[in-house]
Length: 467
Ligand SMILES: *Cc1c(COP(=O)(O)O)cnc(C)c1O
Figure 1: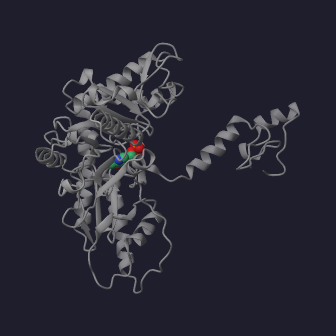
Figure 2: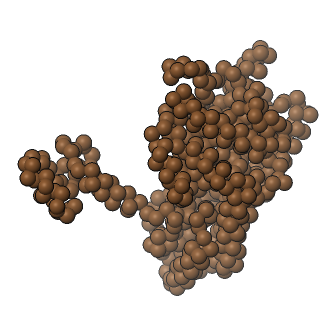
């Protein structure tokens, strides 16, 4: 704290404060302590300006090509967000309409994902896909435990089978809930999890298999139908009936619009639950996920709590209790505002920007593509083999950063870990104009790096990888 944090006393001073310029007021501290609660009050304008200015240094979200999370909504959404900032999602008795709207939203998703009976299945909003994944995983685990105990067998050693390219939330799930994580490695022959060798991973202790629609590293879809077919073969041979949870954090809000004929959802009988992030291609501000079960029976009843202390008798299945309700209203607003055609158009635009960019980048001498943005509008590339190049992708990330662009460089998992890639996530609001500006900067920085006659000095890197 600055030792001179003064207290405003004289009423004459108050008038002066009103008249004086914001950062030059007598009697007002404009430098406040950073790590301890300030002793006294500040004027709201001063406190606002200080917070506002510091947050301004965060970087420009529109130039952040690393994140999947929505950073733009229209003015009507902004108005709704302000009006509902005080609503607590858990107070379903106090805010019954918000609760009703939450139900409508996941019913719409259940329908979009071809649930056999969308109005009578079960789902919930969450704070994001991570919480949704925990709930999906817990339901799988509980179901497996019940079946094992009913058969008089041990339920001590559950495992979950998934690609090693899963998002970190699945590592967390296994760690937090004592489930053995069985990773199927990605390799040159199998750049993604496609059901090969699944019989070596699945056994009687497998609570389920996770399939990813929109792999974080490359944006590609895992072939859920192929994984389901492999599980069909395993069941025919061994009798093991293993279910699939689809992590559709990004893809479950893209595939229904851009690849409507691709069967990855409840059209496949083995798919029992699906999660998505409302704040990714659901186009809502951060803080919203969804999980839906195929039928109400797929969510074990003993995981559902009924709380009465808010009045009424409300079923809840969530890790959080209190949580903002506004994001749910924003999701409903967008469902009404855009409808199916609107979402399709928004995502088609993002895909056309992504495939344009990937085409241009893939055509450059220094790069080859790992994916081209035709699944979700996300693509990644690596350096071509060329002797005498004196720079790496980290150097390029640094150069782009100087121009304001955030483009992460990171290694692929496992057998591919010696390979560094860069990735661009195209989101709503990343226009063709911005894409051209980005390409100009990229070409300029690559040309500059190619003039280097000695290797760039190695500097310690911080991971810029955004899961
Ligand atoms: C982003 C992402 C998650 C985590 O989602 P949050 O909404 O950020 O919690 C999980 N899985 C995949 C595949 C993702 O892309």
